[in-house]
Amino acid sequence: AASNAPDNVKKKIQLIKGESSGKIKQVNFKYGTKNLAGYRQIIIYTDNYKDLIHGKLQYAWQQGETMPDGHFNAYNTISTQQLKELTNESKQEVVDKLTNKVIGYKWHRTGDNELFDGLVYNYCAIEFIAQVYYNDYAKKYTDLPEFDLVYFWQTLFPIIEQQTFNND
Image (tube, rainbow, N blue to C red; front, side):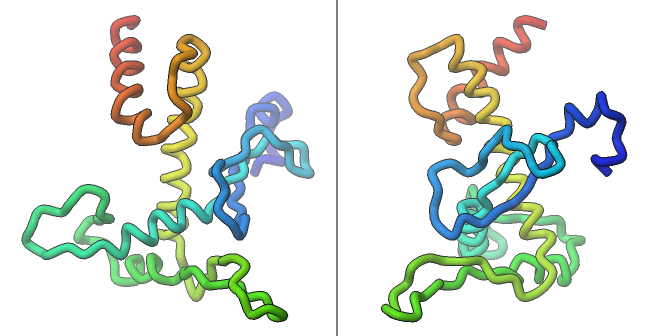
C-alpha cells in the first residue's frame, strides 16, 4: 500500500517492523531508520513486550473477586479461538550445541497468534507515544530523570495534560 501512495504522502509514511533481538535490550524500539525502499521505519524489539505480556497472562485470579491491576482482561464475547491465540507463542531456550549451555532465548509460534501480537504492538505504541511526549517535554525541563514509563504516566503525563488544557 505504501508503494502506491503519492510522493508527498510517501515522505510521511513510517512503517512499523517487529524484530527479535534474541537478548534483552534496554531500548525497546529504534526510530528513524530507513528500509530498502527508502521509507522511514520504527523497529520494535518485541522480546521485552512478549516477556511482559506472557508474564501477565500467568497471573492468578479468583473469579468473583475484583481483578487486580495489571491482569489481562477481555470482553466476555471473545471466542475460544481468539483466546487460544494468546498461548500459541512460547519462549524457548537456545542452547549452544558444543557447550550445552543456554546462550539465549527465542519465541516460537505454534499457531495463529494475532491477539498476542496485537497486544505486543499496543504496548509498544503506548511506550512510543510516551517517549515522544517525554523527549519533547525534556527539551524544556532538563532536570527530569531518565525516561521511565511508569514515571511518565503517573507523574509527568498529568502535568502535560493539564498544561495542554490550560493552553486551549
